[in-house]
Image (tube, rainbow, N blue to C red):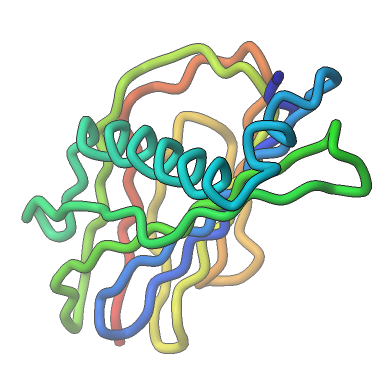
Length: 170
């Protein structure tokens, strides 16, 4: 099973809850994943293994909201197939909460530097009355408007190990 593409949709609500929906798309010519999840017990075991693996990666990250460390938690994992058992996807839903207040706020993430094995895109969406003032991901990023930002990463790129978004709450 080889990773082909990733997509992350990250949103923040006015209470300070950060929600991350991450999708990984794979090419699996031998249908390994399909056979491992073909029974209810196998599916449950595979989902729990993926949840634990993702949680391990998250536990290695240092996530800060306004200089206070927060812990991300895998809330849900789903496995599915796109038109063929050779094209599986895995979906993760991740939550964490930080204290945000009127004025300037800062999200930071410190993580391991690594070379990327597949292309991916990440989009961040903030609520009304929020305005992104600065951001750095290590890659060119683009604003849709003052509260939506996205960036693309190409296979073979090296992620820098640090990112931040500074945002204003009105």
